[in-house]
Amino acid sequence: MNSDQGRRPAYRIVTRRLVLRCWEPSDAPALNAALTVSWSHLAPWMPFAQGEPPPLEDTLALTRRWRAQFDLDQDYVYGIFDADERSVLGSTGLHTRQGPGVREIGYWIHVHHINHGYATEAAAALTKVAFEVDHVRKVVIRCLTTNERSAAVPRKLGFIHEATLRQDIERAPQEWMDAMIWTLLADEYPRTPASQAAVEAYDALGRRLL
Image 1: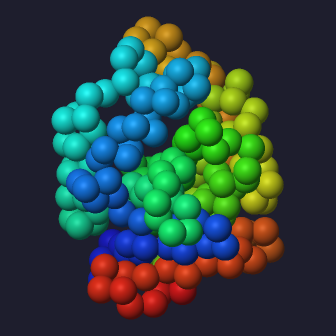
Image 2: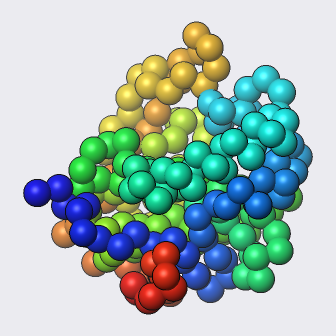
């Protein structure tokens, strides 16, 4: 049986300073503004941040697709908001592209909110949700070898630098970059800082999961 069947995914996650929740189409204007101002900051690291920032209609279509994938249990992309949900601080996700029983965490932070530990706090929360709500066997974080700020996140949370893959990420068309692969296994998780994160998680009906 697929280990994901019958579970209730976390639609809303609350940490000490952040709210992580499923993107809604109504968030599109705020997300678009965050992307536009952060675009040049993200371009060296994020394959999606190439060319010009997306128009609002494209961002709206993106939030609709993310919501649909969330509801269909296909993939889980979260907005990162401040505690009162007035500001978009970035985006993150528990991605399913590694197959059943595995989650891959990705993240980016609004350029005006970097260096506050938000990526680490969000990744810790998603690691906890992955192991304690989704009951996966492994969590993966992948980043460019040149992205020292991003690599610091799994290092702080107790992930293991398992490998460096050559020319693994196509950052721009025909521009391939090396990637660091960080992993954490279920039996390793209880001994990591991520396991001690203060996290509340709720399903689509607001029922407490953590």
